[in-house]
Amino acid sequence: MDNASDDARDNTPTDSFDVVVVGGGTAGLAGALTLARARRRVLVLDSGSPRNAPAAHLHGYLGRDGASPAELLAVGRAEVTGYGGRIRCGAAGTALAADRLPGGGFLVRCADGSSVRAGRLLIATGLVDELPELPGLRERWGRDVLHCPYCHGWEVRDEPVAVLATGPLAVHQAQMWRNWTDRVTLLTHTRRLTEEDRELLSALGVAVAEGEVSGLDIAGDRLAGVTLADGGKVACTALVVAPRFTARAGVAASLGLPVATVERDGTAIGTCLEADPLTGATALRGVWAAGNVAGPMEQLAGAAAAGVRAAVALNGDLIEEEGRRALEAHRAAAGGGGAGAGGA
View 1 (cartoon, rainbow, N blue to C red):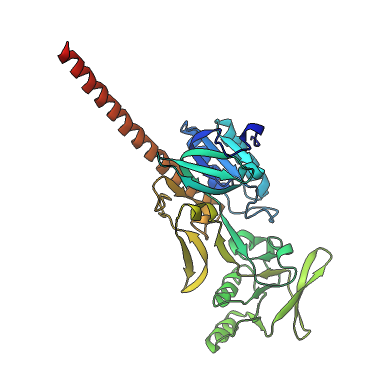
View 2 (view 1 turned 45 degrees about the vertical axis):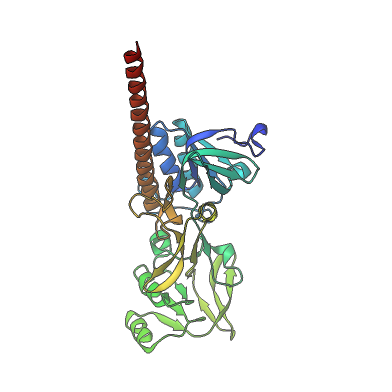
């Protein structure tokens, strides 16, 4: 990996790449690895803020289950650079905006004042989990404040789990977590339950705790429960919340790319960059997107797969362009040669 060199700390681009990958998470590195193996000149810009950094372990990723997120990324970086790809981190790897160049390609501007040219862009900047307003929630995010049972359900199986109701999907969350433990409590918090909701929860054996939650109870370094506004307490070793998934779309927005609202069962749950679900192609020619920035529900394996698919589509586009240019050059040379021969 390279940091910004002294001669890169101005507004003059010092390097030009076939592809600049904006984002060094699972999707970005998977795409970069595919492109580097395709013998493309690739640069990954990594701001160093992966979404899953708070989690101690990753799960459900075949062959790497139980590894730390940092370990997976370190292995991925080594694989990319092993094939000749380059990675910039820190301010030099923090892309602020991109401009479309008149002659084709893009100019990416970074936080350290440097800029790089790219023939194509792969945006894999991920998303931000915006959590409900509750003291102490952010500090425990990814540890015992959770949202995805497929990521963390096994680790809290058979334990007391509480679901914080902040939207219409809370009952669905309680029903889903019931698959991992029969000790689920729904905290009504800011959500009013219907009679049908209550009947379903009762049928499933899910307890309901009325009232707004005011804080977390911590014993040692573990969550022990929550405190209600009326002073009551509910024991739990895991608290399930529903974050809003907000796409990190600053670079995409600088290029004028649209950001869409993501809905589930008619409820808005966040935003994403609009891209083809198969290839990752965006509305702007030369720009692809992969991972959580375009698919907020993707887990690690899905994000990696999306990075590979986008890289394959992107490389195919480069191959077609190179073919067109070669044909134009061939025809021009043939035409020129023919004129010269006739004149002789």
